Image 1 (cartoon, rainbow, N blue to C red):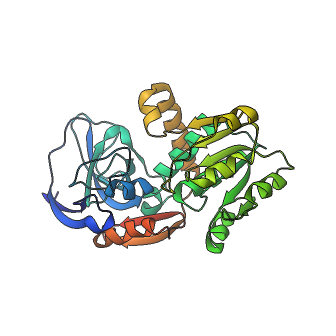
Image 2 (image 1 turned 120 degrees about the vertical axis):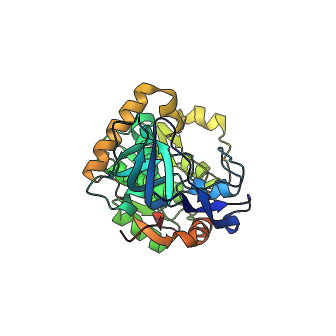
Amino acid sequence: MKSTYLAAVCTDLTGPSSIRILEKQARPLSPGEVRIKVRAAGLNFPDLLMTQGKYQFRPDPPFVPGLEAAGEVIEVASNVESIKAGDRVMAGGKGGALAEQWIVSETSVSPLPPSLSFSEGACWQTGASTAWHALVERGHLQPGESVLILGASGGVGMAAVKMAKHIGAIVIGTGSSKEKRNAIKEAGADHVLDPASSELAAEIKALTDGKGVDVVFDPVGGDLALTATRAISWNGRYLIVGFASGTIPSFPANHVMIKTYSLIGVRAGESPRRDPGQATRQSNALRDLAALGVMRPHISHSFPLAESANALSVLEQRQAIGRVVVELHTSS
């Protein structure tokens, strides 16, 4: 094992331009930890927000971004029994994946299914866990119900499209360009709409015979959120997943009361940490879904570690369709 490794380090909270490729010293493992040789790291919108100091978890620079990766185990602590050196795995954490090596806890590591490549595995966990937790655990989406997925061309949005279709729901997605709308349709959406349409709420109602959608999955926020509330059904469920638009909406309480819909917060990472029973359900469900290849990610951009800043800029400029991945150690 090398005593040093390269990592993409955020040196200031000024966004992707602050990323530098620096050499870091490998530290010894603590009990319960696993060292992974990273083959690919998947980028998420929170990675970008963290480099700007805008995410709810705000590490101080210097730090290494990256919430998920896939690779090979190269070392385990003496008390780790479920994983061994040489295992091909997926892993998640609060940061550190944009590096040649990543130390994570044993509990955050899962086998890489044969159905997924390293790059797909690196992009699977966050989107899949968010989509499953939102639609199943929080939204209780049922077969035959309708769901509106805002920002459906993003990594989380596209995972939600595929999860909702796996459940058996009728899926309406939004995408801001023809290319994005085509990708959403290919992911399985039944209907795809332009979020900029001045008649968006009416178009959604027309697709649901005037009823409105049973569930809204919203990782976007902003003005689009209020438009979506005009297209939600009586007793509908509105899932607040994130604020990729950069604007946190204010929902009118009188409208919520009149239409009797529920505003439901979604914290796919934090909720299982607070509820062991939910953690077990989520872990088991995600293991089974991964083995089936459900929510296989669409990867629109791939970069080497040296171009990590450019990879984050793709997210910043909203050019990604599905996921952006940083690939490492492509040779054996």
